[in-house]
Image (cartoon, rainbow, N blue to C red):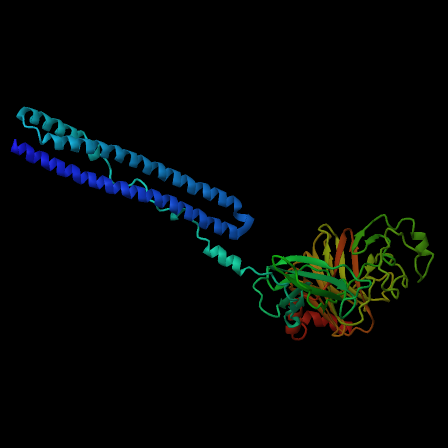
Length: 496
């Protein structure tokens, strides 16, 4: 019996200790529950303050996050209340068992005592108090649901009105006009890291200096230029100058335009003179085409006239610029086998460049220059007043430089496009492969009269491209050219 009492005493001590643990755990749960509620209220309060500071833009986020916190609170509360209920029941059962065990110590009858001891033992073994987890299933920590607004608050506090960008300054020293391209460079008067892009505007003009409001073309715009330099390429320089201006833009507003600058973009521009071209040539501005039926019905008229004009040509063939009245209508129409057309603008000084492209099936054509007094029966290169290169694709291809009825065969491949460089003051006429800028031939002489671009075509067509600057590669070749080649001088001496 003593042994049983001793065993029962140990059980009672264990049970009492467990009751203390449960009591402590209950207090922990109650504290955790209060903490959950207090912290949830605190988090919601702090969240309210943050969202109040962010105004209406965060209202929808506030509602969602508040709901999440309340859901977490509800979940944690439910878990803790479940644990609390289980612990209360276990404690109640344990207290009943403890009271029963205490009364059993007073039983005198050995058999009754043994029976009571066995019951207590069985009940202690099955007691729920020993199956409880004495660790809260959830904590009262709610900070993982909170948002850190410190960075956003700093960003909002740093917000300021975006200033209007200042006007950029175009750097004339860094601007470049070359190869029918214009590179414009500019800078800001002071650093502005709010600049998002630039807008570049340009227009062609014949007036030097500041842009003129009257009789000027509209500005053309290039938007969203990210750097401080831009190159306009593939231009046709059919005006003497180009105006440029630029302005800076940030995310909100565009600033003032820079002071406009004017860059010189002079280049020779001419059309083909249909008023004096051979009747078998169909002329349209910069295009000339052989027309075998063009001269019929006009032969009698031509024969009945001596060195006079052949009358007013068909409007369809006459598309000559009015900018050169000295030339237009002041010479006879080419006839006979002189299938020639001249340009309508005279060259009296300076350096000029234009290009010519022949149709693939063109049988024969010449490209060069001539004085205005070139006779109506004369062919390019067969007089001392004309210089040209001649291509003959009839039967076999031949390529030759011609002047004063002398020819120099050129041992080079005929290019798809021929570039013509004329330095009037320097007395130089050069022909180039327009694509590779390979020098084909150079005439050297002294020009004593204004020159007209000249073209001959038979069985085919030619397209002339004007408004071109002298290419940089051509300028470089001209500077490096030392004297004349033997083939060039053989015709040059005659030319002089």
